[in-house]
Image 1 (cartoon, rainbow, N blue to C red):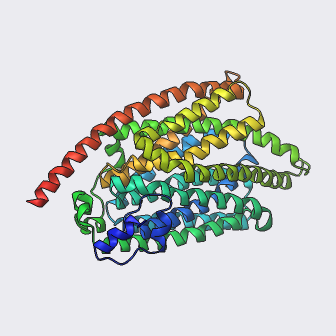
Image 2 (cartoon, one colour):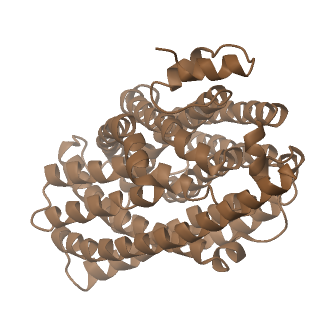
Image 3 (spheres, rainbow, N blue to C red):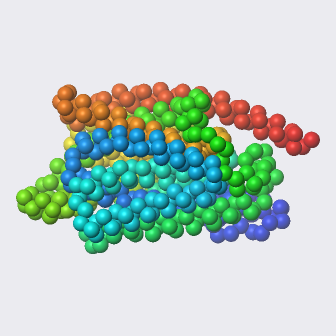
Length: 478
């Protein structure tokens, strides 16, 4: 039986499909000319998440060695406040430089910060100082770098292409997460916390190179005739220009669709972070039991506890990432095909609802570990693909600026609300893990309602975009 891709390329007189094309066609529908860019994007996000997954367990160890999980939740308020200014600077930069330079400048900024942390350790800065600073820093880093990658990917693809290729690109993200947590688990004892930061910074530097390669490839290749329907592909000049002036907050609040996405992200993060508080509280109690150093030896005890928590956390994230890879390989493309983006966004809130109903009857170490692993793995695979695909119908400014605001400020506002809730729950309401889980059940219901509202808005915007494309096609033919 002939490969339809081969037949199509032969008829158009193009060269036979390469190895990358043949490999990707095993997992999803790939059109001629799409394979290499999709693989490069998959490699790019693999390296971004590899770097972050090396750094993530270090955050937990450095912070919880000196502070409680409650304090961790409170620091979300600091991050939410900082994001107001950070997004303003990001929007200003995005209006002055093209997309590839924007990504490079932001990434270089974070790489330089990792060098600073290494130097702070060399000069003897105490863990009680580095821990909170690093915690806030990585809270900004993880959402900002990942958000700008998906904004870039959204800018490259049409809605139809994104729905086909995003699940495949997401596989690179999930594999990177698994490798990163494994590296952190096996090497944190060997080379230490701070040298791992430099390794992560070197990996990020490679991502900058890949971004320029992908950008150059996309602006120089000829666009297929059918892609002219999409306005963003009319010329490469637009892709080389900075974005229009205007702040991301303005874009969010003037669009019902974007505002609903922002609220969904806020609620999603509230539920997830509350669950993370439950998990980390139990993990710290478990880690304390394993530390052999006398607590009176403050420095040695703190470092031993940080290592113990980091190993527990990296082992947990390795489990999460293995599950995410399985979901990505065998479920995400099928769910997108059967339910579309609109149906797919309902899956995670239903998983969370069922998980917290289960924990409400008993939050043991085993139950929390597996419930959170299933929730987080679904978030990192299916839901991340959904969050990226929701922006395919938006403008370039909305993809970069509004998405950055939503993925930073609204994410951390969800953390801030969790911090306030944890404070009330532990200080005045005497909440235990089961009661926190019961509250999450109620919030998950609100989450489902927001998904229904987004589905309605997405249908309206998709219909309008289709009408515009049809009109553009008629004009082009005339």
